[in-house]
Length: 74
Image (cartoon, rainbow, N blue to C red; front, side, top):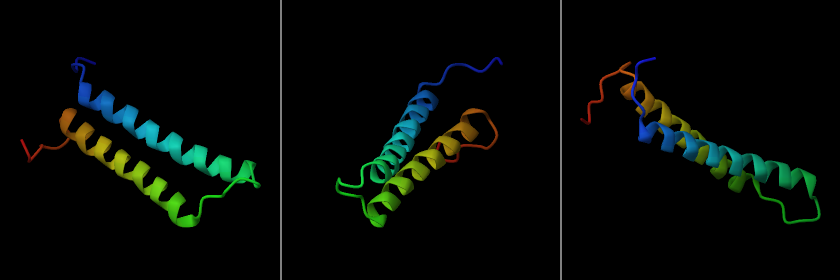
């Protein structure tokens, strides 16, 4: 592909994976270590929402960066 390197795409990908890993770690830790303080449903939902918000932002930027939609903010 002839597309140039985009720092924003790469930063958003890293941020997304950070949020996904935080969520997965919280879920796995809660189920693997029952004697530790378990995260309640609201905390897990907040982590899930953060990862989904990061994914939506990544998709929004990638669509504009790849030219699939016009970036109306620009």
